[in-house]
Amino acid sequence: MTHDYRLAREKMVKNQLIPRGITDKGVLRAMGKIHRHLFVEEALIGEAYNDHPLPIGHKQTISQPYIVALMTEALELTGNEKTLEIGTGSGYQTAILAELSKAVYTVERIGPLLEKAKTLLGQLGYTNIYFKTFDGTLGWEDFAPFDAIIVTAGAPQTPQPILDQLTEGGRLVIPIGNRYSQDLIKVTRVKNTFKQENLGGCRFVDLIGVHGWNE
Image (tube, rainbow, N blue to C red; front, side, top):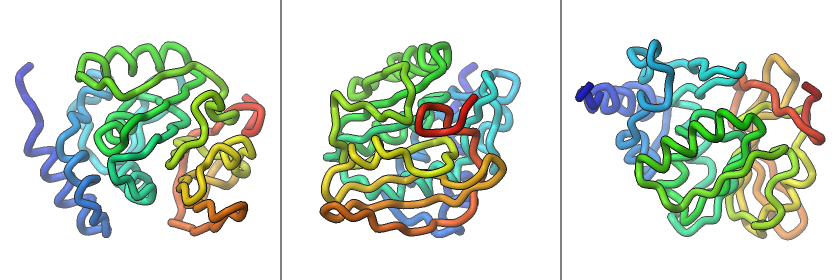
């Protein structure tokens, strides 16, 4: 199918992102460029650019475009960052990060999801993404520290290993709350203190792991 959904992407940026206050030019450019429809199941392609999350199998979801943009903008990426993503999922957020970071280290606990994302992102030509099937609540210590960390699943509190793996001045965005609703929290590391900012309510799947929820 040769349909490239360019108009759908333009409309998504114009109607869903800009009116809600997304101003980062890099984020808007990446969201307008990445073919979101490639990251959803075939039956849902017609809904790929709509203003809501979609299931991607294994009880996981691809986040609503606005939430992807909001979280990415909060990371304040300039193109030089080493970015850690906890929860690869479909790989869509990973692609957005890869457009805006020097390197992306992405961790996913569900093997088949990681393999599918890895294949697709490889086909799309990304060479700055590193993948690992692992418990994301432990971060990825081998490559720490990270300038930016994004967690795409809801946690009861911020996992300590993830805080420890943030550079001085680094930014972390994570949904914190109970299993039914969370607040999107931006954490900035200033020496050994962690400054928090609440970016508003959200709803994510559970962050499962040693420092998250039990399955």
